[in-house]
Length: 219
Ligand SMILES: Nc1ncnc2c1ncn2[C@@H]1O[C@H](COP(=O)(O)OP(=O)(O)OP(=O)(O)O)[C@@H](O)[C@H]1O
Image (cartoon, rainbow, N blue to C red; front, top):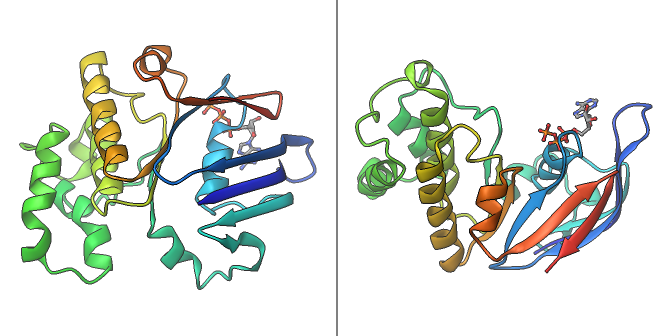
């Protein structure tokens, strides 16, 4: 589904922050991406989302070689990927409900087709009573949950989540983890970048550990 071979990444003229990364994200798999702060987790998530290009090596996404994918083709490929960024990236002029519904509107769905799904998912993430407010009045944890709901609403083939439980308390983190596990059971491959040890301990999943630019995988 996604394949990296000898991938390296450097920013500008600096030294490589990711070196010789070789791994696959298999269909329907579940993995944590972990490692110390600054190890390159966010950079790796951006490579997986194709918002950053590697400085060397091969990346294949959905059987396509990233180096020959044009900018015009990217939006269509990215639609198969749900992503939760650390900074949420919600649109401040749209309500929580509208933010979550946006990926469906973009692909041409009508409101009557998705309304109940959006409401159900918002209730699941505990935002049933925050649906009609704008992101600036949401707390950090509420914004995070809205970003998660937006990433999940299209049932993507791959979900990438960067510290998705960083702003919520432990019971809610467990609930969100259950949501990711359910999504995985329905067929989505899940990659969760986290330093939250408590979260890691709750699932017996593959661990991808970044340190000193290198990746070690524990299946
Ligand atoms: N746009 C950028 N330009 C230059 N250097 C960058 C850029 N983004 C990240 N870096 C550097 O690359 C390294 C890896 O950063 P990254 O954010 O990927 O790590 P991380 O593991 O996600 O960290 P954290 O857990 O603290 O979020 C860091 O040394 C960081 O300073």
